[in-house]
Length: 275
Image 1 (cartoon, rainbow, N blue to C red):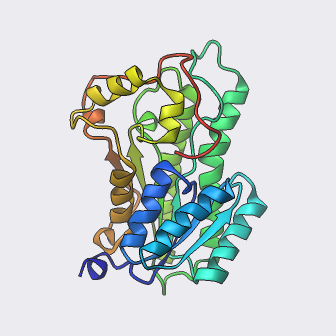
Image 2: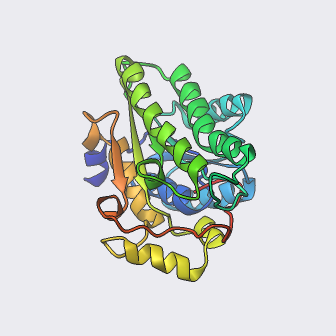
């Protein structure tokens, strides 16, 4: 019943940055909905571990290793997923963060921080969306792209100007892609979460900072990988079949408040890839 409602049973989904955290949550959400999942990550062992979890849920899975900042690698990723699992119906652009950079004031941020944020967030989203759209069959077979942005791309992002600007660009790109790809029946939407509970956040912030972030969110919790997965699943499913070009806040109400809690300047940095 649930699979029929969502319309994802037997479909093929490709999730980037799916080896841990939010990406893993997204991959498992689609698996539970009956979709075959191509699990892509920069680290092959992580991708295979999540693919094994997907298979344990009774659906097909493929582990892929690719750097989604590289155009050739992205094309190969799409081709491999199609050859193994069939036409890719849903693309989830989940890769993104700001690499090995600690938050800092705009007066001290170097261009390397900007370039890293642009490449990990905007470049990766564009290249994967472009490759997906180029091979998708078109209007006779509906498709969907779901991009993962951030609360930082919706409101000011002190200390993380490059990251916030790159995520804002992902949101704008989402709207443009939605219009350009609509004639081909490819819907494009975006999810903007708060900090996601998982390895990346733990590596970047102290326990006290994470608790302050949690306390600032009206629903009293950070975005869990499962919550992010459910939100992405909804936008990719039949339930959102007439929704495109939209940004859904998956933030527990944080964007509605004036409260602000984040990673203090210089406290830490995130791992190289993934949410």
